[in-house]
Image (cartoon, rainbow, N blue to C red; front, side, top):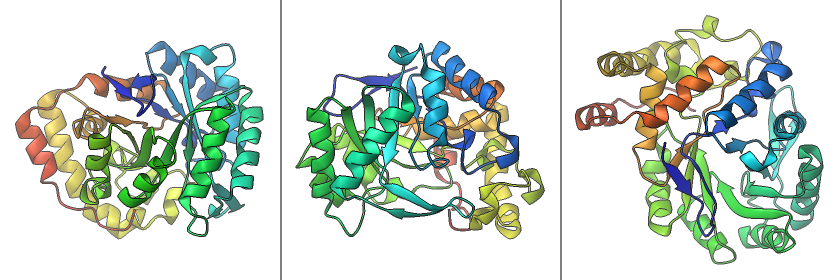
Length: 318
């Protein structure tokens, strides 16, 4: 599996990482198992996966505690990434607000360090840019924490090209984390992916499986767990799921031709978007973890890439 260089850093990470959000937040509230999730993180390390991604928002806070437990005794094998700048108002509805004030970010970093049980975070990402706070102020505060040794590299999440440039003028932007998948291509369309490649910034794609839909295992709301945040997403409403089946069916046909799973083809398409592109699919099971990691070695032929490029847009907001 290829490795991705963090911009302005000596650190690199395997192109397939693991997103830990679903272990504590957003999906399948009744089906969580902390022991199994810890086993998944540790097995990921055994498979060569080193980018372990979490955030203080997830839970809130409980996902960092879980990741901290998983990495106890294994810290040196991981490139530990977390995020701050989103504050949960109501866990039941996932309602959050942005807070990019320097004083909030400094306190958030200290709290994340304590929950994770580490003395430094390898990659700290501004989860969302606060429209009420100039990004230069938020970024400057995080740069000071880099100088203090609490943080390694700095990343942005869901930022525009203009915002990336403004932050980069203050301190190097090592990575940009945004959604990218066969049914969410905004990062291609808005120039962010191209900009990152040109500037030597790693691009970390979250939700490369379309929050599970591109695995081909969801044909309707009945296939989602009873208590699951995806029931609130327009793209997972019955009419949208039905309309989007044509998209995933075409991916499945290609997967069968290549002797791969639908999920592996979806991940491989994201990785094919650039040598600077990595993915952090989330999973809570060892089986799907191994399936995802194997996608890092799948090379799609030109014909398959062209067919995937031509897939129709997804129905429903992401």
